[in-house]
Structure formats: structure tokens, C-alpha cells
Length: 160
Image (cartoon, rainbow, N blue to C red; front, side, top):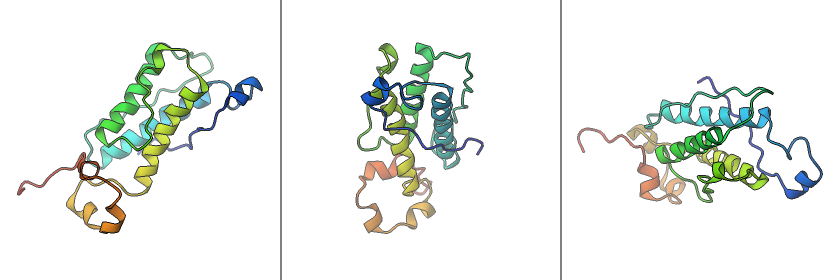
């Protein structure tokens, strides 16, 4: 796997905007590269586990690049594709309309929170695509998940 996970920034506030906090008040190449890299990481990981998703290669942003509406839409569509291949975590924020409006700090938080929550589910080991993977968990570890959540992306053996 070539992409690496970078902890998202999910705590931007209005005070950051008012104080012109350099690390949180502006979307810059570091933010865009982190988001693109995290999308690539999640899609590569899920693809490697047998989920029906093709890895998204990250776009490398520079100081000259300004994200267009199409860029923001592509980012949001990529995150949605990841949730469709895996599943949508609790608290998932609908980010489908972000590209059509002025991007606010809360929108940037939602984009990165969604990535964070998907990664958190993967960290808890909720990825089952073979009988062997599923067999290593106890009922107590699985009880918080619905059947649909556990079986999404699951490749059933031929004998079923």
C-alpha cells in the first residue's frame, strides 16, 4: 500500500476563522494533500481486503493549485464511494452538496470527520470479506453491528 494515513483535522471553529488561525482557518495544500492521501489510504486498504472499490490515486496539491468545484465534488464523491463499498458509519455527515456552496469550516470538518470515522471502524477490525476473517471475532465483539453492516462487501463461498 502506497498511501499513508494522516490524522484528520476535525476541530475547526468559528473562533479559528475570526482569529485567522493559520492551521485551521484556511484550506491549504497541506489540508488537501491530507484529505486526498486519506481517501487513497482507505480505498487502497478496502480494495486489498476484497471490497468492490478501485483505489483512488491521490492528487498532489501545490501552492499554485486552487480547488475548483469539480475538485471538491470529486473528493466528496470519493468519500461516498468508500462508504458505498464499505458502509456508512454512525454520524456520517452528508457532504454531497458541499461543492455547490461556499466552503465553511464545518464543511471541512465534515469531510475529515467522515474519513476519520471510516478509519475508526477499520481500526476496530470491522472488515470481513472471507470466512476466516469473520471467524476470529466473538459475538460480544460483533453485537453492536447489524447483519447488513457485517455482510456488506462480503464474498460468499460458492457452496451457499
